[in-house]
Every structure is written in structure tokens, then in C-alpha cells.
Image (cartoon, rainbow over all chains, first blue to last red; front, side, top):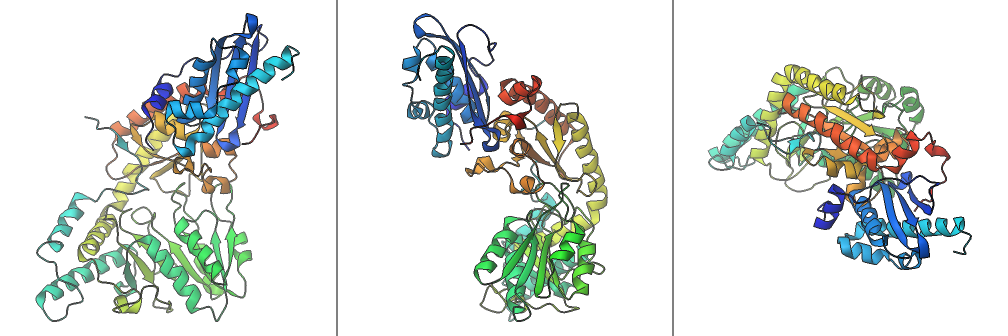
Length: 129
Length: 403
């Protein structure tokens, strides 16, 4: 399968790989997917004052497109508020990375990872999701 | 000098040996006659070449040349054997037995026979990929007419106990078909002693050209088949169609070379395969899929736990290998062969098949070892599963949101 230049770039040079300590102030974690399906994404956000995402990190088990999708969203969520992050749609991810139809689920998973991380943040901070 | 990418996918196909190609070319240009032409020397010359090749194919497997029927490849041979025998003997019974880890050319043919009113039992394999003979025997019924078991598995390279299965089938009057596409030149095949009735061969897995194969059809005791390709009555009515002389000459030469060279070649390849395995065995959580003892020397199928197969293939693009996981084919399903071994999903999704061959070098194997060390550790740094396991989490206890 031929990958787009952008997928290859994120795959070769993934941005923001790693983990925050789970108990670090403002950190929330979203883990989505399942080993059985061949994709697991862990997205962590570090939320500062005013609900702004100051930093993000990811780890992904999955194909090149899954790695690229999660790498991309770490870049996109930084600097946004959690509400703005919730506006990121899988179609935007798929378009940016020129994902072929069989890889659309990777972008859906990346969107789900953002939602899961935000939900975790809201749960920890007593807000309604 | 190392030439990249390195081909380690010899079970997908092999290059035509230059000695084989050289023998084929005259039959495309000057010696172009139709082997069925009886009225002139062009036809006689082509026919002689076809018969010489038939002898070479027969010799490799200790058969009579009259038992060899040319086909377009192992897929066609499997179709002819299964449909031809099932249909011809349908008055005796309509039950067939095969194995879940067979090639799709057998499994899908069985599905078609089910649509035609036959019943098929698909046997499980043991954790090592081998068929349990007691389970095999238990699956045979009074109305079973045919069993079909591959000699060597294409994904994990394990060698099934064909000799024992032949005895079991023969004593019950059941035909045994063996798909030997991955076996020629790799394991000794003696059809004088093996009680096998039908055997499928392919040229391009044994350094011959694509598009040609053969089916062995036993004469004593005689096996009969319904033809699946009708026409001019070539190949004694088993398979009509003008014979592709150059392809057949290529297959004959390829099988002749296999017969002469397989002893030394297999030892050389075994050393390289063992070198590859040794070189990778210091990586944590690497698992061999399939039995190591009952296995052709060419194959190494490994699961690199917590690394997804497709991303690994992408990382090692200097190596032409295949992923046991069929993710690359859009189906997103892990390999059905590895699932049949009872491998869990993580391991089935994380497998790579390395198949070595005639032109593999030590330098290439060493390069592959270095590359895999680098890339596995990089991808594990990226893997949340690896991180969880390092933190002592048992992944089986995690509640995953399947999607």
C-alpha cells in the first residue's frame, strides 16, 4: 500500500511521543481501541488555566496511519481549549493525512481518543461531560 | 554490495532461476510449435520438450510421467483435484475433510463444493500447526470420499504428517489430495511410498515461471476425476487447452535443478534461517509461530509482541517480507492460520513471515537482524501496550473498547 507523504512524515518522525505521569496536575488520559482490532491509541492532554491544552503526548499500537493520526492530533489539540479540541472531526484528520478509505477508522479512533481524554479530564474535575 | 530491498518472501514466489529462463527462451521464438500438432516437426519438437519436462516433474516426486497433468498452477490443480474427485465419486458419498489452515485455493474450493451439496469438515490444528492424527481419523466417515491436506503450510512452513494420513485414508478407501505447492525442492517427496492419490504442484515456488503447475493423478490404484476444463481433450481429457510449451519446459528444468540441488541447498538455507532466529532471539517477547522441528528450513514466522504487523512492515521496508496479519489487504483481520494455532490477537497482529531461498545471503540475513533490532525497539517505544506490560499490567484484564 502506498502511504501519503504526510502519513510517512508523521510515521518517521512522530510528534510528542511519550507519557505524562498519570497523577500530574491537569493530566487526563484517553485510551481507545483494542489489541484484537490491531489498534490501541493512548492520548494524554495536560490542561492548564482556562481549560487550555498546554501539552499532549501519545503512544499508539497500530498501523502507520493510526500512528500518524494520533501524532497529528497531539499537534492540533495543543493551544486549544478542551471545548475547541472536541470540535476536531475525523474527516479533518483523514483529509489532512490523505487517508485511503480502508484507513478511515484510524482517524475515527484519533477523534475518539480526544473525546476520551477530555471526558477523563472532566470526570477528574467534576464537570459534566 | 548489499542490494536493497532484500527479498525474504520466497514463499510468495521465487525468481526464475537464470538456468531455467535460458532453457525456456527458445520455445518462445524458434521452437514455437503446438505440442498437439501431429503433422509436422514443429509440433513433434514441442511435444518432445513437454514430455521431457513431464519426466523431470515426475522424477522429483518418484511418480510415473503418465501420472502428471499440466495445469496453470497449484490453484487450478487444487480445483481440479477437489471438484474433479468429489464430483466423480459423489455416488459413493458427499463428505470431504480438510484443515482450517489450508490455502484459500483449497478452502474456497471446498466452500464452492458445499454450495454444490457436499459437506465439508474443517479440522482444527494443534498449537504447533500440525494436524492431530487421532482427530483426523475421527473426522473420516463412511461417506467421506476425499481428504485434502497441504504438505507444507505457506505461512508457518510446518510439514503435515502426510505419510501417516495416507495410510489412514487408504485403509478406508478414501482418496487423499495433498497441496504440495510449498513442498517441492524443500522436502523429499516419494509417491512410490506415500499413499497419496492426488498432489498439486506449482512451478513458481520452486524457481520456475508463474502460470504453470501440475496435478499428480495416481494410476495404481487408479484415480478418476471429472474434468473442469473442457475442449480439445488435452492431457488425456483431464485438462483441455493448448500446452504452454515454454512454461512447461521451465517447470521441468526448475524441478530437475531442485532434484539435483535440494540436499545441499536446504542445508545452506537452514543455516541462514537459524542464524536469523539466533540473531533475533535476544529481543524480548519474540515468539516462533508453528513447530520448529516439523518445518521446512526456509520459513521463519515470528510474532513481535506489542508491535503491530503493518507498522512493522512499514518500518522494515528494506526487507520484502509479508505480515501474517492480513491488515495490508484491507480486511483488517489477523491471519486465519495464526488464529487457528490459538495465537491471541496481539500476537496474530504482530507476526512477520520471513522466507529464505536460493539467492539469500549471510550478509542479507545480518542486515535484516540489525534492522529488526532498531525498529522493534523504536515501535515498542511508541506502543501503549508495551508500556502497560512494562508497568506490570496484564492486558487480558483490561476492558478494551472493541471497534
